[in-house]
Length: 224
Image (tube, rainbow, N blue to C red; front, top):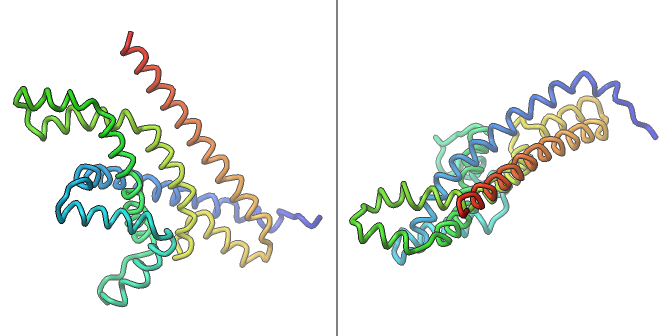
């Protein structure tokens, strides 16, 4: 067995620095994905041009591979719009946000539909505005209903950031490829990256279970 970390050890800090970029992309994607996804969830069911456009957007991002979306946005669009030259990091943040919004829109729509319609009708009967109803009745309960699913989407998003290496984003997997090209030893850097991803996802999974348990506890307390 020819395993030797001697040539890889000096590059360990360089590879691990990619965690920062990975987390940045995941957080930005989850944050803006949630905002855009919530707006989409409110209008996707409408029988008008706006609703049809949003449904088409969701179908596109759910129906095409993430690596295609990144490549098309980063390499394809600049050919049509010569002045449009985003960096690889900017492309990753935009596409991950839009891709995440397409999935979160369906998750949040399910959360909204799970809200007791009687509460919304009661708010209308009392003359409460749609804006106030949305901010104080719909959003808090919808988020409560789907928060575990949003946490799971964030975990999935964190793993999918590795795809950004295809357009040159200096996240963990891209740095591993650079180190492999320098040392000509692929196993050791890949093992380090695999362990890093596993630990990172494990931490996020534990956090997700804590959130879910907390929500169940709060719900059971509220019913007593």
